[in-house]
Image (cartoon, rainbow, N blue to C red; front, side, top):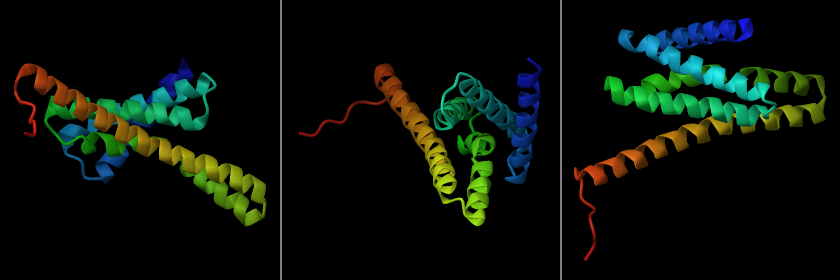
Length: 156
């Protein structure tokens, strides 16, 4: 339990720092930090369930994307204010470092393994953000169609 509490605090603080660095509005800093914390907790929980780092990062980024879209609707701000700082703890910076280190030391098989894992992890973040944003737009359009706010445009 101590592990999860400490990870939550560290991820909250790191996301808060990046939100400040990106000049986020003051009323969005804590909300973006909560997005980052929940994404990181989803990531490490999936990692504890023995999922691969790529899949656990995908789950964490999906959590950040969904929470960012929900916060955007609730607080009437762009979703990027919550998603961009929230995704920062998931970026595979250590993977990039170890890939470069193994490349410099001449361990090419390890470089290929670490590099491919790092690239797949980065792609999983991008794909998760795209899926959560597309899912949000599809659900919003479906809700508008059901409520009668927009009509389906048909071609004649």
